[in-house]
Image (cartoon, rainbow, N blue to C red; front, side, top):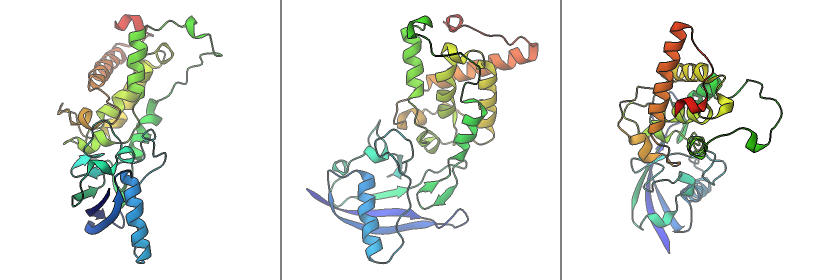
Length: 262
């Protein structure tokens, strides 16, 4: 079944341009196409008319890289929960629908062009501590470092974050807590992350605060996250941050076993 759609797409030549919505017709769109494939078809039509194509981010088109990401009819990544824009298929729309497509709307994500935004603020947070520098020696047998299944599962849940920025785009405050909490937690939960645990959470949270708004527990971030990251990680991050500040003040920062955290 082929669809005929009306697209209202945000067009903006650069960060200093005011930008506006422009209307396009998308015809002969099959229901098996992904949303990005549909945009490819529209761009081919624009090129055939000697018009400038719509700029949008993409890479893997498999829902794992976090590059894709637009607001579709007011919702980041579109109407389906747990789905990235590149994995959203046109069968979820009806022929004759009008679809509004715009970029992430957040102060920390300035528009570069059209639907492309600068998510460099996320990179700054990772550079502040989203890694392990402590020497841990050569690779050991997996069973030599004991990690409970519950802890391992929780760390993997946090590590599922693809850094797309949907959480920021959906938050009324433009907060980056869910992304930062996921990146802090997936290291801080594991033994390898313990030596730098307190320095990591302090540095990453302080960096986050320079770019993003404050979290007031709206929960919109969790609702639109394609990886299903829980806001429970924000609570864990806040707890670690307060403990790190307390330890810094008293000069009592020490290595803490995962077992100490229950």
